[in-house]
Every structure is written in structure tokens, then in C-alpha cells.
Image (cartoon, rainbow, N blue to C red; front, side, top):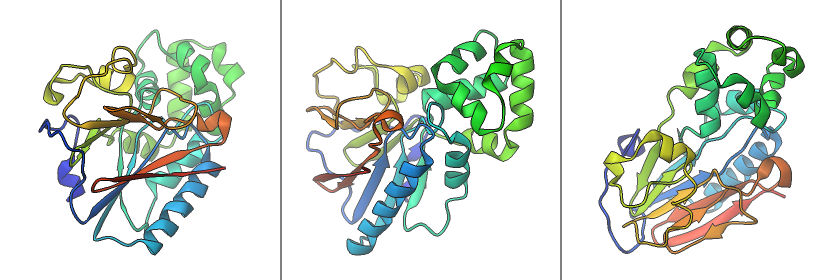
Length: 254
């Protein structure tokens, strides 16, 4: 059921009353950024919540930015890549940090040093690569060293991630959407990178957008969007939103 709704860019239906499908629930997890400790805590909370409140169909959506900044990007990827026997169907959206890593590994010029500067250094170190050694290399050498260090199954896993997930009247996405553009015409760069004008737009999108990417001091609730990036890598607060029909609630670490 969930797999049918999961795609790179999903269809726009534009309802007005926000509700998830009957008999189904979704947990969506914000930006983890290498914090395996917080991920384990939140997964335990979600599993406990499911045990105490069972429902017929349950999805678990990760909104992207699993890597960089925190201490254990490699551990986070391995944990989620091998997530088995969990009482929910796991789906993954591509964040801008995963996108940049994949582009660096592909040898795209002009990216490697920027990636190291906004959290990629911690990711490299989690795979046993010295960030200081990388800064003295060419971009081609950086790509070669990282390719040798990062297990190919991790790269393959990241390449399976989608861009949006539609759940009734809710749209889950990493960064946001370009206001006024139909969902089927949204560009991956906006879905993974946008801030303004999405964050400042007050118009009804026809669905409620649930997103990460932009850190807020606590969950940010607006009439047309909910932001759940609570800066876990520096605040110790990793957030999951729980959506079931017209009910919304939250689970958090710390």
C-alpha cells in the first residue's frame, strides 16, 4: 500500500480538510544528521507506541539528511539499511546532504570542499577517513578515497531514496515545495533545498506539507506546513510526527 504511494514526485489531489487514510498511521522522522544514539532512542519510542496503539497499516518515513554533522553517519546508514522486523514499513526521502554526497562520489567538480565544510567532514570520519587528509587532495582524489571507504551497499541504499510521499492530505518532503507549482512539476532541487519562498508562503497548498531541512526551535506548525527539523545533531532533540486520520502528535528524544 505505502510502496504504491512512494515515488520521486507524487500526484497532486488538492483537498482542503487534512486527514490521513482510515486505518493507517504514519510516523515521520526529521533530520538525524549522524546521531545514531538519538535514532535508536526514537525507534524504540516508535516501536513502543505501535505496541500500545496498534493499527492495521503503519508507515515510517525518514525525511532525509541522515548523514553529516553528527558523529556516526556510517552507523545511521547501516542501521536503517538493515532495519528489519520493525513493526512499520520504512520509506526514505533524499535530503540535500545525501544528494551532495552522491554527487561528490560521482566526481562532480566544485562540490567536495563545500561538502566537507557543511558537515561532510564528520561523515567522512565516521567511515574512517581523515577530513584533514582530504582537504589536501584534489576533488578527484577525494572521490576516489571516499568511494573506497564507503561500502557500496550504502551508496546503493541512498540511490533508492525518493523525493515525496503522499499520505491522504499530507505531503512529506525533505525541504519543501515551490509555491504555486503543481506537485508533478516540482523540481528535485526545490524538494531537497528550498527555504524561501516556501517558508514564508502562507497560501493553502491543498495539502499539509511536513518537512525537515530548516532547523526550528521546537516543532514549527503553520496552517500549510509543519517543520520537524529540531536540530538533533546539536540539540539532542530528534523529532517524529505521528499522523493518523485527523490527529497529529509528536515523539521526541531528550
